[in-house]
Length: 138
Image (cartoon, rainbow, N blue to C red; front, side, top):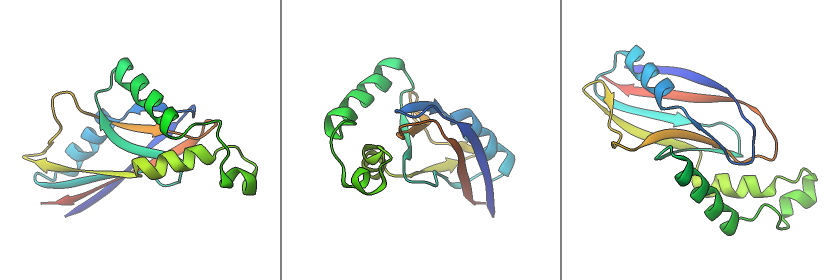
């Protein structure tokens, strides 16, 4: 069995981190799939889906590390070509990846105690996002 749905978000950009765990859980429950996998995917090239402990310290630590690895004020070839100033957001999203797959066992996602599913918008402005949730199983 296959079930697909989406989550609609308005973001603020600049590493805006949004907990979408409850929304994904509801889609999994509504799918009636008891055992399988759920893939959460962000179309576009400046956002990511990952799991973290959704806590302000962890969120800030991740933002600080990403700023050191991929500085927002460094020169990027993308910016020279498009003049949109968001080259850093494309590189961050490429490093973090656009999707996440989680096993479903007995109708529940197999997340750890402190794991939440988050969408992180790396762009340099707010955006409307439609996150795809695709479930395969029985």
